[in-house]
Length: 205
View: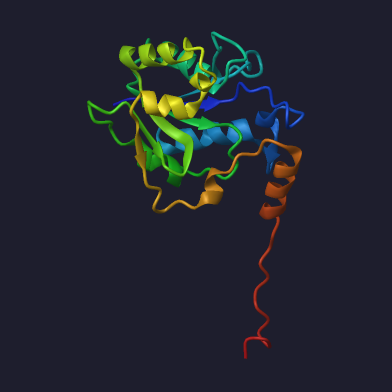
């Protein structure tokens, strides 16, 4: 079983006012961090869905075939590309999840049952794993061709593919946060700089 990783990084970042993927934590961008996590979790190859051609020769970039539609379009474009590879499933993360760790990725990476098209956590739509197949691609194409406003949503995608929602028994909600605004990003940075001072020996006696 060969597993691909995919970082969704094609959003406009309009609420943030700058490219979220290029925000840095300890001299590492969120894009670099998510690529690293997917590799460390066991993905054989990691791809980027977004307009990052030319930024680095080390990035495997998949262009969105239909711009400005949303993450489901990016997933569809990526699945079509991955169908030409040897990968059987793909682990998908959103680039704006700064608290994600390997512990949230690996439980989703077990081999999917033949009747299962994917799985995710009940607590969050990302990360998620999707099977790479013609039938999955056809289902997503039908979804995007629907004029219903909700046809572009990830929620509709998980329903249409009849994906399995797992219980995140060992995962805390902060691991799933997204940062979409400068305020959310500053709050995240503030949480990272909190230092718990050791108890004073005199106070503990």
